[in-house]
Image (cartoon, rainbow, N blue to C red):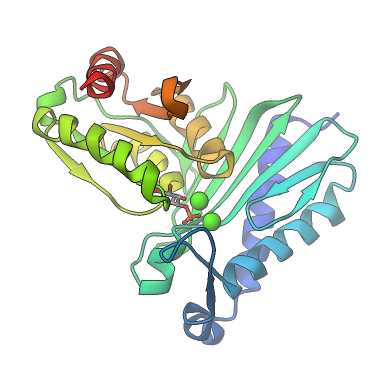
Length: 262
Ligand code: IPD
Ligand code: CA
Ligand code: CA
């Protein structure tokens, strides 16, 4: 039986393999080679497709019996009880606009539980990883969430979905939260937002309506760095992920709870 550390190492090797397959020359052409998905700001580029294909090929070669779920359509059920969850580019609109904040996210589930995750920032070369019960790292160095215990001074990262009707709910949550925290950032990659929280570069994160591939790896990286992650399915179809450093969970839950009643 393969260990969780070995699975993490396969994911790290996969990321190294896939990034080396990206020809720098073609990256600029790929930025403009996109199609719209669910809305006029939801893009898929040929680089998303290239990364997903290379990742799937690597997994099939090295882990033939594992299941795969990829944002751009990869779906294999597998027979081993292990499943790979892939977001080939998290932050595609940043990539299209040349904003340096987009990543590959790979999580590995065993029997439905995420046990390892890797998020690689494609623009800075930071590579975050975690193994369940064994901590989180950035470029092989152990990372921890920060110690800020004041919501009034907290930097809170968030994001918004592409669908207009969801944005109305998201806008009303934000309107309530904004005057009650230190400040808000919307960087554009939920997977990296979670990793930055894990590394102490933000104090809390929340987003409504994320998909599994956006948060599966990043959530493990936060909890293994000492943070708290919660996913709640609420009324009106609201699906809220919250993540905080070691101190802010209780206060943040109250704040978000109040924002939904507002
Ligand atoms: C998006 C990013 C963004 C978040 C959106 C996601 P994509 O993923 O994570 O930060 O706010 O909800 O859909 O489309 O770039 O893979
Ligand atoms: Ca995503
Ligand atoms: Ca994506």
